[in-house]
Image (cartoon, rainbow over all chains, first blue to last red; front, side):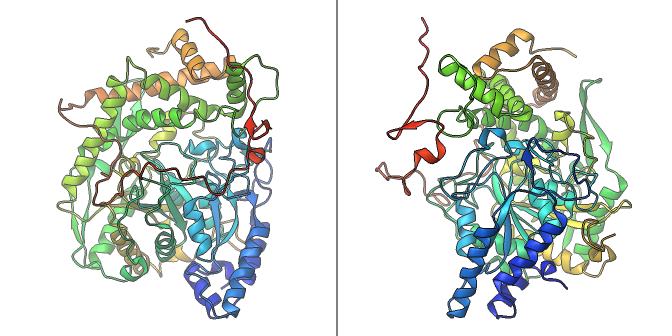
Amino acid sequence: MSIVELTALEIVSRVKNKQISAQDVLEAHINQIEAVDGVSGTIGGDNNFEKDKVHSFITKTYDLAKHQASQVDQKIAAGLDPGPMAGVPVTIKDIFCLINTPTTAASRMLANFIAPYTATSIQRWIDAGALIIGKVNLDEFVFGSSNESSAYLPHPRNPWDTSKVPGGSSGGAASAVAAFESPISLGSDTSGSIRLPAAYCGTVGLKPTYGRVSRYGLIAFGSSLDNVGPLSRNVPDAALALSVMAGKDDLDSTSVTLPVPDYLKVIEKDIRGLRIGLSADYLRISVYDQTKGQTIFHDLPEKVKNEVYRTAEILANQGAEIIENVSMPRTKYGIPAYFVISRVEAASNLHRFDGVKYGHRTSSTYHGLTEMYQQSRAEGFGLQPKLRILMGMYVSAAQYSARFYERALKIRTQIRQDFDVAFEKIDLLLTPSTPAPAFEIGGVFGDSIMMQYADQFLVPANHAGLPAISLPSGLDEEGLPLSIHMIANDFREDLLFRAGYTFERSTANEAWRSKKPVVMKGGK
Amino acid sequence: MKEEINSQVFDHLVSLAALKLTSQEAEYLRGQMNQQLQVIHEMEQIPIEEELEISSHGVALTPANSSGLREDEIDPLKPKLNLEKIAPDVKDNFIIVPEIPHHKI
């Protein structure tokens, strides 16, 4: 097994036992990146260039990582504890601030922005010995579910089939992990932006409970919906990443004071007696039909539905109790409510990008401050940010806010109530991750409705603030990853890890687990 | 499809948002907004009790899990921000901006 195929926990163990140096681990991953990634995304780049490469990155931080690796090795040589993530190369979605490093949000608006501080989640990983290998691509300002809206081109491609999207908005994070460029990546999830690309790229993606991980240093989209979480190739690595970054942060008043469990200890517990629910409301696809002017329902594709039932059977064989017919009637309102709440918060959060204090200021001629704002924002933002700003302003306008915004906030209460009732009878809700596997590049881009409905099974957890995980469960007939999704009650990430790890171990010998993405040498 | 957001409303929103759009951008964005509004109208079918409270976010932040607001004490920014590194136009540690327009109210 090559170094890049090691899990993060294996890397930590071997580095601490001096079987391998952090610098050797880093070098192996840098070689992997140089072999599979191709050119990094740039403004004005060519999206048709190197179509067989992954293009996860915007900024590579090799020098920083080399310095960090050297420090880890020096600590080990001195008999000091290098930390629980010692020697683990990690990639960071470029929506997080890393001091003295470009933080672009994949937007022209921040193309010249060098972050003056580091996000708490990243700092905790650094303090634990992780090696920051680079900032990876995303949908512009995290607005999207395919990574196609990035201003930095070429945008990432799905390592399993480079004609397909990696998903979004954490597309670069998912593609980097899937292509063995880093065992762990840091993403953000507002309506599924960790879990959907994880599903499309065949990785694990965790959205923690709202408040479990500090959002300090995360460029905000929807402050009541945003979550920080890890992507990894297996459940224990996700548990490691969360255990290091979770916990109270004085710099984020919405981060909770609850103690962080020892996730790596609880992950080993069996799942006998765990009550796992299935809901018919999650086993159908809802789509807004514009010709009929209403939401209609379709059956799930067989291959997607089968993964849910197959997973239920596997978990039942390990002692879990499967409870069917869990009623979640407000699931179908998740996307409509999200269209309102997220856009209002996006409009508010993007007001700060005005060309005054940081970011892009127009160099064209303007007369007065207002024109400077208009020109800077016109040049800096792409279409997707502009769409969200305008929509947010409309639905929060004085004459509409009761009809749209307040109503959406009450629907969030109702969605939460569905879960509160369900969790009296179940411990986990098992659902599909996405209505279908990864779609073709260009297949949906530009259709904001269809793009948003890809998140329909994922967004309710964001409304309700609940933790949820996407897990790879197989490959379809085209070799594209299939996945399943589980939601737990507040701060019960331990149950997600236990069930996820049980599923992982139960399927360890299945043939699909030995397959590699096509971008890997010798893959497919 | 019914166009709730007509050109006039759209142009007003663009002005409020301090944006400038090309005609192509405007056409695409207004079209997408009207389509999204159709989806948003689905919310109006849900019966909602008058007394139902809004949720600012899904997880309740209570004294049991939250430290609440910090004390109202000055806490100087550390490290001190180097404006020259991030601001577009700086002089003597002030950010330079064009004159604010004066409008008759």
